[in-house]
Length: 472
Image 1 (tube, rainbow, N blue to C red):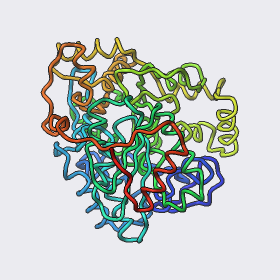
Image 2 (image 1 turned 90 degrees about the vertical axis):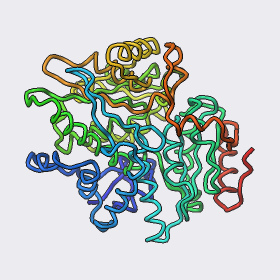
Image 3 (image 1 turned 120 degrees about the vertical axis):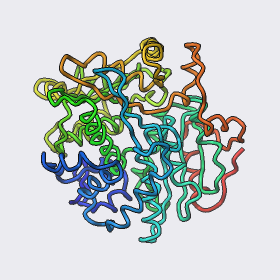
């Protein structure tokens, strides 16, 4: 299997080269030339597998044998050795129509660990086996940065720089990133929004000379391996839900907090592979560009709003282009035309049959801050289960779209301890995991900079050249 760009102007690449490229050299996103189809018989066989073995089976369909099976198994085992639950991503029943997929059992208590622990091991493996220089550059709305840093900190042959929006992530998210003082880690706190950080990252990756000179590698979900690793837990969630429900007539939906479209696109990929998910439900917050797209066909960034679910405080969803590619019938020329309109006019509009198809493939809800707090309190009172604010968005969307005869698995994308600012508004006192409780006593290491690509570039040139950047 080769990989191509959504914009059609990159020569087909193998799996490892695709991962190393990250963003396509034409500015597009890399996708497989064809999506493998999984038969009903294979699905039945996979239903018996644990998470690690399922990961290997799915990954092998896309990796072209470029990683020997024994090496792949070692990478997967190492990736999930630090997870606090032996299932990696267990499914809990809250009521007859709602189940929760817990994706927060990794080292940084967020769903990003599932993919980024593997990416850290993968990049380390490629560095050693192919002699590649790995300089990772990424932007985060909170969770990606901590998970990426945890995945590669201290690893030989790898350096990582993460941009995050200054004072626009939760305190725990900030501390998880900035209390790391390894020499191969640089945190840049940008006076702007996540969208500003993401824009700078994309511009730097699009500068092919700069990208090549400094060996830039992507950690964000523009990198297809992130999408692929996340697809695994859709299969796993579906299989565990089938087991627990015990009623073959029930249709199974998934409700997914997704601000950057990467998480929900992973489910879209799984469904195209043959996973019989009934509804793909997109949950967002008041930064609801994805809800507006699904309901009206208009994709246009709106006014930024700071919410109780800061990891989804995003107005430009970088993975949207991958979905657009499939929506437009894998027509790269049309993708270039639409993305050109987005750049020049600030919006994309689909209507008619295209919008009808969007609405057949997705439902979407943007939950308000008030809805989130209400649901956190409701489920704490009724079930004893404590939702984090992002998970509450997913539950709000689940309640809106789950019909008779359906069960929804809603994704718990973070541990509530990461967002205690919101939880405290309900006068709920939670017990912090020791790993989080200990963060407040640690020193922080970050460089606060203006929202300026030139300043980011200067910091990177010094850091990646081998000279340590001062960390006040």
